Length: 189
Image 1 (cartoon, rainbow, N blue to C red):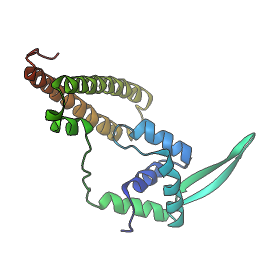
Image 2: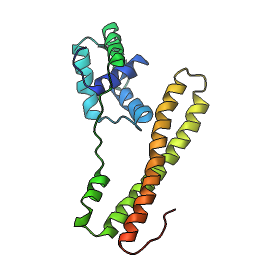
Image 3: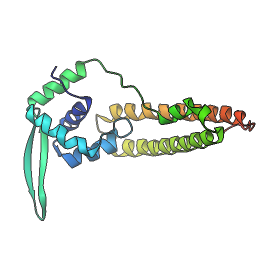
Image 4: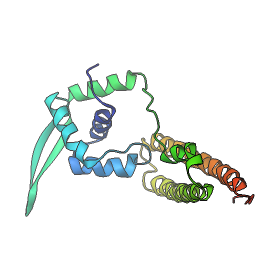
């Protein structure tokens, strides 16, 4: 298989769902993939250029009245073949980067109260993310009930929801343990 990074295959996959502009790709990536795949806007256009150089995508220009022309990218047969090769290839694990865990590991260098505040903020963010995903599931199930992709999309959301629930359980335990270090053995709700 030709050398390509994972984000190139994310872009190819989104284009396999339909032709779109770089802006549309970024918006769809944020809306549909954001809970498990994050890419900066600055990377989309260089990736599209590389994919076009490999003849994996084509670019057409759509004139727009009163606005700059819209560049729309579409998957080529060679791009579809590369995408299928990627589907058949083994998954390469990506090591996580969790700043909170780094801070906890280095915890002896700061007062426990500072770490408690960090874990509380982390916990609140996990709760908020979970509530948003729960709402997203209801919306997608309602709006896309006849879409054959729905079961696959929901698998990705369910994975993230399970991760968020596990983080909530872990953070409750972490707060209890950190509070015991300062004599505040108060259970976390």
